[in-house]
Amino acid sequence: MQPLSPAEIEAVVLIFKVGGLALLVTLPLAIFVAYALVRWRFPGHAILDALIHMPLVLPPVVTGYILLILFGRHGPIGGFLHDYLGITLAFRCTGAALAAGVMSFPLMVRPIRLAIEVVDPKLEQAAGTLGVRRIVTFFIVTLPLAMPGILAAAMMGFAKAMGEFGATITFVSNIPGETRTLSLALYTFTQSPDWDLAALRLAITAAVIASEFVSRRLARRLGGN
Amino acid sequence: MLSVDIEARLGTFNLSAKFDSTAGVTALFGRSGAGKTSLVHMIAGLSRPLRGRIAVDDMVLFDSEKGINLSTRQRRISHVFQEARLFPHLTVRCNLTFSPWADGRTPSMPFEEVVDLLGIGKLLGRRPAKLSGGERQRVAIGRALLSGPRILLMDEPLASLDQARKSEILPYLDHLRREAARSRSSMSPIRWKRSRGWRKRWSSSPTARSRQSAPSAKS
Image 1 (cartoon, helix red, strand yellow):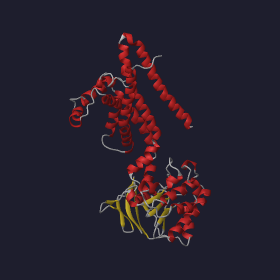
Image 2 (cartoon, one colour):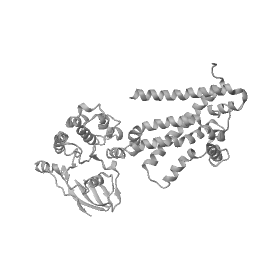
Image 3 (cartoon, each protein chain N blue to C red):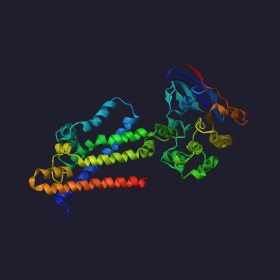
């Protein structure tokens, strides 16, 4: 089998770029939101909970469209980012990362939330009686104890970001080298009759990447016990 | 000196407690459900009384009239809980040095002295899951001592242990009390709350100068 063509390499590199960026931004946010949902009682608790789960329930294309309205060059948030911070998200790979991040967010919040729920608040209380600040307690007690759930969430989030299609294509379109991630490249290839083989090659590439993740994970599991 | 004069509402149960104590060791007795743990929690700042005043020496920890309510960490009161509450992801050594490490506190007793006093030198490299109940409780006491507390609260530290474990820890507590009496300036007073079974032992102990009044419970 021939080595991957530049276009294919581009698509593979792009999913790591998009997935990595999405994970980098959403993971801390997901940890914060999960912690807030578990430990704090505040007005709008249920609304926040529902809002986070929206991307899971909505068709991805709808999520992409909402992102386009909000974060487009002329959207309320996108316009602000563009005018004041010089950040453009629409039709850029950062936008693809945003779409991937939003789509994977509910999948990440859930395991982290479960992991934090298992951390006994009495331990945090004990840290308080030892004179340790809440924020420090969070980093040295809560976070390490919730780490298995956080790692699982990162894995899920990255996998989801890799496979994200509907919201991405709606929000940032399908631009080679910018937003054409592996899934979008595969879709593009299947659209033209002569590219069957290329599509198949990409599908195999995706399977190889995914199985690499799974095997690493399995190895860690087995190594851990 | 610890002075407590508080009223609290716990569900349908009204708790009022009033006592002053100048002793090195104060023990709090009362039947189960009398509100001992609740009272200890209020002194530690883990829960809030309805009204009243709590002070240690000239420092007011809580005063409902003046609107004072110091946070748990500001009170500098260490707590030994009934169920040890050691941090499971840290070794015994890290548990012991938790407070100095995480908050830069200076322990009032040197690390080695506390380790010797409690006989936990051999456990330092282990995790809490690998400790027996008695060992866990000793480490919890050491951890509390090393946070440089003004007061040490012990909420039935022996309740979850069987007779053999209790007799394993008691000499250490006795030792600790004597140690505290010896160096009163640096670490006193120590207070604990223990189950009734131990009352006789303590009240017959000639050096245990304690004045106490059980929380009066009205419902």
